[in-house]
Length: 404
Ligand SMILES: Cc1cc2nc3c(=O)[nH]c(=O)nc-3n(C[C@H](O)[C@H](O)[C@H](O)COP(=O)(O)O)c2cc1C
Image (cartoon, helix red, strand yellow):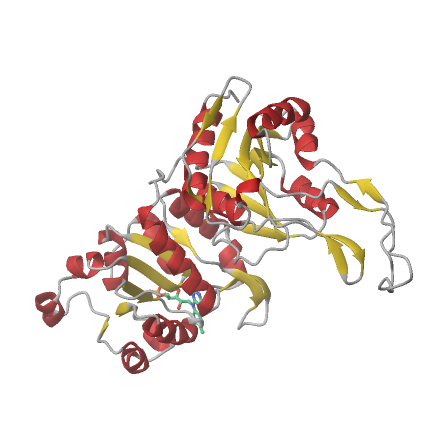
């Protein structure tokens, strides 16, 4: 619930503005308190009357409106919020923000605010892929601006590709995360600016037959939080995710896979990178012969023959395409000892060891020990997003010490 949370919503001038009406409805349902600003172009797509009726509040649109300045000045409007959300964030607004332009109420508020900003971009695929937009987005990410989407999909103009605004429920999820992470350890925006990070997350599923698989309890919460923290630190992030029940973190490239073999292929595609973080719980084995038809219940239970899966972590470390290779060791006993052995065997730089016997899989908290060739450092138990933030700060510092 967003009870009592104050959100300043800026609506930009794009076709997707109509979807914001649904976002407004949901925000109000959750108890959020809204102030809404529309750009001049936004009013071409949805009427201020619809927005005012649904939001139950006056719509602000004019920087030089005297009544607004006496009722509530533009500086106050930009600050009296817990979060500023821009949806749809047009190519134009993104460019203005990047360069600090302030020639209307929306852009002035974005320049004047001292609050977190979450953008939900929406534009034609060519506009999104244009190097100018890509540069602007990378710059804003580096400045700590948060992103929800965009997603791949069919555009209003008939083209298909990235640039479609995230659906209201996904923007709402990103709003919740942005508000929750208010209490996180602050991460300087530019820590990984210009760096590329590949993260694996979640479990793998190794098919037995068309309806059954070998899997594990990994929820992907830690890996996804690490990918999100790396993006927040300004990195270009590729997240290779096994099947999880989590939304894609905003503003990063997500590759969905099921098996270890698919995960390896997606990782190889994502490399080279400055940092590789293997947080996924990759199945060590797969079934040698996957049955084409569903196995039938017979007198005797079937005996499954297993073969070893590729070792993604060791492969990345041996391949030399990542400057810093980080693995996870999920252990149920002798955690640090096993992590040291894993570090040596797989030739990686850092192992994040955690004791999964304590119900960590699926939990929102984690307690980890950072094991390197030099030492082992145990961090206190904390939320997984806090572990992620601390780990990214640690890895950025370590990467800074590597030449090249
Ligand atoms: C029919 C139509 C649809 C548009 N859709 C988008 C869009 O989805 N995203 C975008 O960035 N610009 C879109 N534009 C262009 C913007 O409306 C234009 O750049 C405008 O100056 C944006 O103003 P604002 O950023 O102040 O809202 C569209 C224009 C038209 C005429």
